[in-house]
Image (cartoon, rainbow, N blue to C red; front, side, top):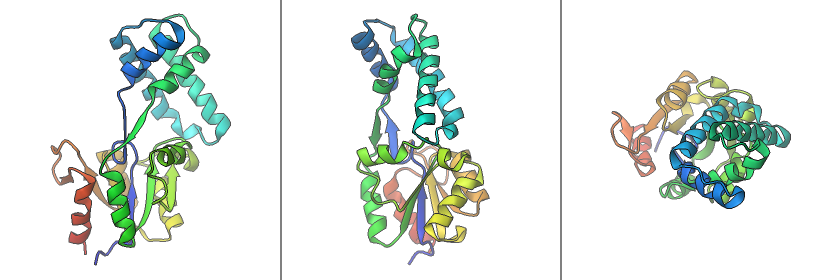
Length: 224
């Protein structure tokens, strides 16, 4: 039997992926605004928007602040597109561009771990909309706890999101394993908070990593 009682997961790149936003933005701009924008410009503008979102997602702690951040991101997107439209005009197209997908191995592993008696949590650098995103993808219900950077006011690798998850799960750091795809925010952050950590690298290139979530059970068994 594993010595762990709980497993925590990162969200983006671990449980969910983002459909390529550039083509989706390009199609939406044409449909909604009648603007034909080359794909390279759409992709570059989305990179600008996503950098800003990552830097400020901790600020989106309620519905009003989330709406404000989304409009701010849309304004930056409009500037980067350079097509003489406002952030408010571009916001619906930004919403169209963002489409999350569940990895095929996510739900089976969550069900397996739940069936084996593990407590599960998500710890993600995300705004407060994460629970709704996971629910739409059919991934929310296995989790006892969902901790976002926005709710805590700190982003991984800061220890506070990990500590919050441990407190809400009712387990010690030694009883918990964290799984994520980022060597710094997930692995270094979890270990600094006292958790064990497993790097998920779906490319299979990183040493001492798992290539898919289906490989996680083996790591938990090795730690028995």
